[in-house]
Amino acid sequence: MTSPADRLQAVRDRIAAAARAAGRDPAEVRLLAVSKTWPADAVRELAALGQADFGENRAQELTGKAAELADLPLRWHFIGQLQRNKAAAVARLGAVVHSVDRLSLARALARVGVETGRPVEVFLQVDLGGPEGELAARGGADPAEVPALADAVAAEEGLALRGLMAVAPRGAAPGPAFGRLAALAQRVRADHPEALDLSAGMSADLEEAVAAGSTLLRVGTALFGTRPLASGQDESHQSHGSQQPG
Ligand SMILES: *Cc1c(COP(=O)(O)O)cnc(C)c1O
Image (tube, rainbow, N blue to C red; front, side):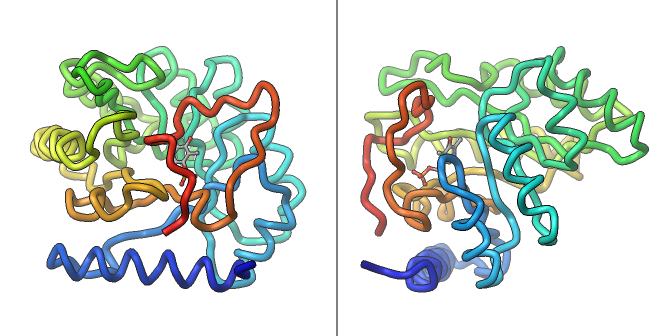
């Protein structure tokens, strides 16, 4: 059995090696620990080791854990599909929302940003498609619609556009898909220079994501272990079916 400290160090080593291989400064690549399905105590252990950013994919689980861990200076990220009626609760926590894929959701978040006077930081989730190039339809905007969505989001007073986010297609090599994402991100950045971040890369494909320019890796399994498959748990974002850390 490896300890949380060992696993965190192993992931940091992988990030540093991938950054060096890509000729990038490892400090440009931040780590977001995906704590979905794991109890608050597991978050506490990693937080004690210096990990500050954590991601959840269900609104209720996020609000519960954030309340339990309110004594810690954590930064929460929401990375799952978000229903409009749960958007306000997530935004009020100050969470960064990685899964904005439609204007109606963006506007629901923006209302909270205006109300609190603190813009909600958002990523636009891009659907990178399935192995045959079709849209995967598990969250994410059609790439063709992303530039217009970025314009609309950037125009919202209650939102701050951080960049693009995506999950690599299942059953296909992640490199080319991340390459397309990076090209789209560059295009969005031409009009919105503030959208500097790229949220891409998970346990199984973080090296390919770093090579493509990711600045924010969303890593769960390699940090916490293999998730128990609870009934009703949406595992549709699992990449490549791989559960192996490292
Ligand atoms: C679960 C999840 C992750 C983390 O996946 P691992 O393979 O466990 O590292 C990353 N991004 C999203 C959107 C997820 O739902």
